[in-house]
Length: 339
Ligand SMILES: NC(=O)c1ccc[n+]([C@@H]2O[C@H](COP(=O)([O-])OP(=O)(O)OC[C@H]3O[C@@H](n4cnc5c(N)ncnc54)[C@H](OP(=O)(O)O)[C@@H]3O)[C@@H](O)[C@H]2O)c1
Ligand SMILES: *[C@@H]1O[C@H](CO)[C@@H](O)[C@H](O)[C@H]1NC(C)=O
Image (cartoon, rainbow, N blue to C red; front, side):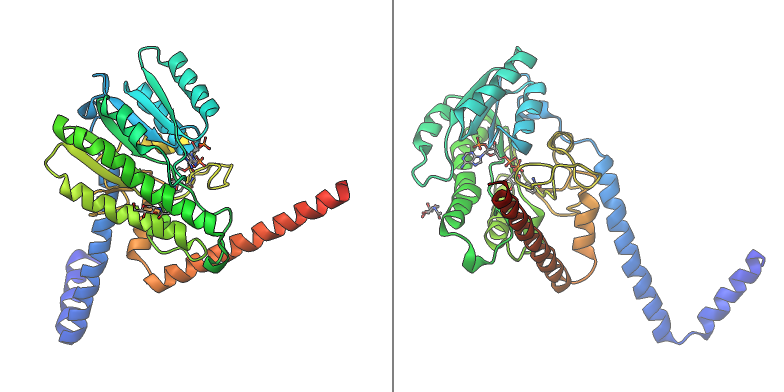
């Protein structure tokens, strides 16, 4: 078929079409177009370089404070921020683990200073005054609100031990607020700062059987976006990191894949994409920077209904719960045989 004949066919088709069909076709094209545009925007954004860490005082004597710094994602934030030239302040529960990572940093990056601070963020009488006293004397350029607690296994709310419920709120919500409140005034007066809070896809769609964890992450997500907007123009950048699965003790996932990075890969993508929205297309103060997580958020945000995803999460967690129970039963049976 020649071009001219295609053109003629098309004009004839349009001329023969009832107006309503044409309108529907246009709406459909517009709808598809906006989806394609949003997906393209995510890809272009992910290819963009992030704000350089020097903006926040790297190699200029500034400190990076990392909570939950001895394992998983927090440990890699500590190592990679040290590599980038920040002095690092490490806060976690266990002194021996803190000493270990401080020694590792000192050995690898001799010009970097480290301080360790043992604190149990689950304790209602954790010594925040003591923490404030130390942090007030430091030029804090970066805060990584990383410490977090989830369920041991997906559990119905009525069966969740009261202690777990309190610990999750105390660690995920209270500690995040209290530590941020300590460092924000200094950052504002120095006109530079970066506050990253590790959020979770568990707040993108509510997660049945992880209700308290899911709610705590929704809290920090909303709070962090509001804080980011409050601090606009002060030189303090605030970002909620929307995180899907990462290999760690908390996720109980041991094998990495394209969609489930190691903490090292995940943190590398975060630190090279500061200010980049990635999968959180058009959502100020949220970043979904890892290339395997970004399309997942795009799909959740754009396709199917809220009800669909809520049901999907419910089935997923019921299934994980069943498997966890079966595994416990197998191990209990093995233990009895072994006796
Ligand atoms: N892994 C994932 O798939 C995933 C997905 C989405 C979001 N996240 C979020 O990422 C963050 C880090 O998770 P992760 O997977 O890296 O966890 P992780 O491997 O279990 O590491 C947790 C860190 O926090 C410290 N910690 C735990 N309880 C503490 C307490 N009460 N007081 C002080 N420090 C404490 C631990 O050290 P000590 O035991 O020595 O205290 C450790 O350094 C959390 O906010 C989590 O919700 C993770
Ligand atoms: C968290 O902080 C609030 C407000 O300071 C306090 O009332 C509450 O007891 C703390 N702990 C929990 C688990 O809510």
